[in-house]
Length: 288
Image 1 (cartoon, rainbow, N blue to C red):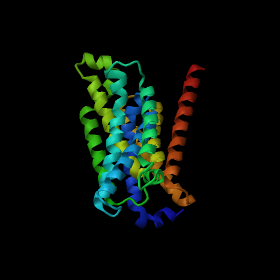
Image 2 (cartoon, one colour):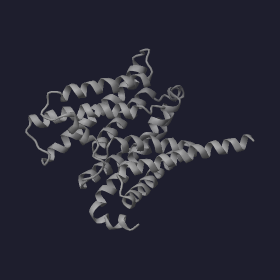
Image 3 (cartoon, rainbow, N blue to C red):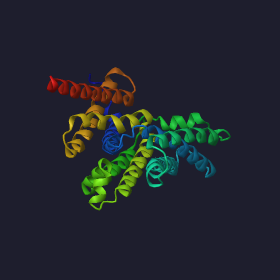
Image 4 (cartoon, rainbow, N blue to C red):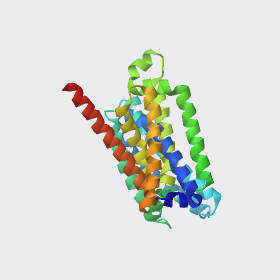
């Protein structure tokens, strides 16, 4: 049971990065869950694969190696650029342009075209798809001070955005018509919200991996939606659940000697299941 504390000195940066990423992704995931765009995470992740492949081409052209500081930021920038671009495609094509498409169908199209492009980009590259997938499944190991600073800055910006524009964002997501009656540019607010989600997901994927990023993007908000009675409660409970689950997950992973990101996702998935069943039981009791 003491193995977690024994490894703290060696892995504290990894733990801190994971907890910051969990809270950050959870807050951003509120937009995704309230808009019922769960598949957005998968499509953005696949688009990030294209971004990383493109960034690797650029790094190879600049003769950069992994040890170069610029190498890290080129990969992060490539992933974030393609992820943010794919995140805003759905509201643009399905909403603004008036095409006969749903947001889910656009996300499916993004996923498929990104899958094809990633294979094409690496088919004749000095690196292979395996290297791209390894980069995107890092699983927090090897996190350094720069990752802590990056996620701290992203979380701080997110908290400030929520504090300043949280009410407008929620109204625009939940009831665009009412938002427009209040002279809120609902589509612009929604577009910027999805853009920020894409940036966060793209930056997180390369550091935390697909499973952790996707899991903590959707599961905390899904769980807290069943427990919250107001938007304010949703904003408080969601990151609190994410932090609690990630702490328990990392501790359990150290004790059982299993991958910590996967254990953390398992814990938050159990939290979500308990919240679903609890809401169902409470509703059933009231009806009876």
